[in-house]
Length: 130
Image (cartoon, rainbow, N blue to C red; front, side, top):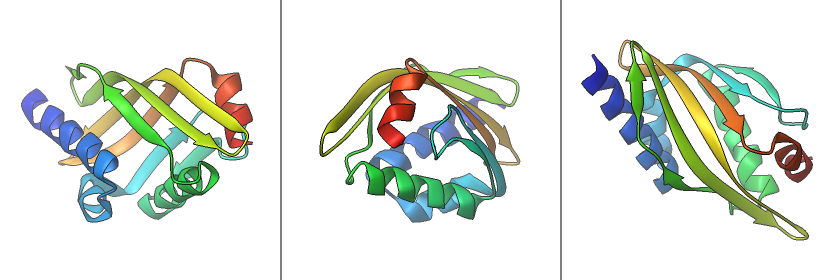
């Protein structure tokens, strides 16, 4: 099982890096639950793949298309969960953000069913997203 969920996670991060929406559609469960941390206007729990795509669109809009994951660390599997460290950044006129984070994904039936995100400096991320 861990080989399969690691492969799904690798394909997910590759699709995010490439902006490959069809691949993301295949990898994310339709009933996906996404836990966006913090106190910004984008924070909260998003239910459903379409809601998550809306969130990703808001990231890109607010960052003027600059949001990227620069580095994905080792993938660590435990049952149906995969955790990894990562580095991400974004900028827009008058603001920049770059920090480390941790993503935790739950994989079920060959798709990502739930995602939890953790940021190194949540207050700074909240300020960036507004």
